[in-house]
Image (cartoon, rainbow, N blue to C red; front, side, top):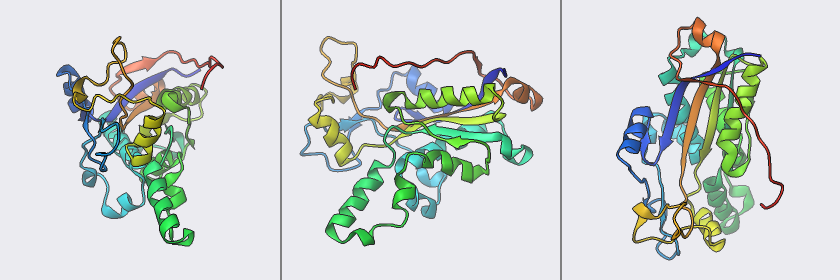
Length: 267
C-alpha cells in the first residue's frame, strides 16, 4: 500500500485564518469566543459563540457567495489556503488523480432557515433554485472540485463531531489503495444561526457564561456548564509519498494509521 503524507494545511478558524495566524492565535492563547454577531441573539439564553472573522470577498466574488452556503464558502477558502501552502500547481497535475473528501455534520443550515422562511411567508415555489445545491452536505467537496477542476473521487462523510477526522481518514485510505495521488480532505461547519443556537439551547448542551465568553469553554473543569458552538473549516492536502517526492513538495508529516469504531450505546 502507498505511504501517505501531509503537504498542505488550510485552517479557517475563530482564532486565525491560515497556518501562520492560526498558530499565532494558539501561542497567544486566544479564545475565539465572543458575543454572537451573525444574528440578534439578545432573547436567547446563549448569546456567545466562536465566529470566524474572514474576508470572504478576498476569495469569492459576489455571485459565488450567493450560490454557496457559509459552510461551503469556508471550506473553499480552507482548500485554497491548503493548496497554496502545499505548492501544488493544479495546471501541472493530472487532475483525474486528485480528489476531494470534505465533510459537514449538518451542511447548509443557514440556507435551510432562510429558504424555509421564504416558503412559509410567500410560497414554496418562491424559494431559490439553488436551495438544494446550497444545502446538501457534499457541496463543500463538490465546490472545491469544480473550482480547481479536480476529477478524482469526490465525496463526503457526515458523522457529527468526528466528521473532519473521518473525512481525512477515508481520504488516507483512498490514497493507500491507489484511488488517487492527491486528496483534499477535511471538514467544515457553519451553524451559528437561530435554529443552530436554539436547538442546542433546548438540549441544555451549551454554556451560558454570556458574561465571561473567554472562559466559557472549559470541558475538563468541575464547573463546566456546556460547550460553546463554533464555526470554521480545516482542510489538509494529502498525497502519496511517491507523488510528493516527485514534485519536490515540503512534507509536514506522515499519516501512519487510522481506525474507527462506535460504542453503540448513546446518540
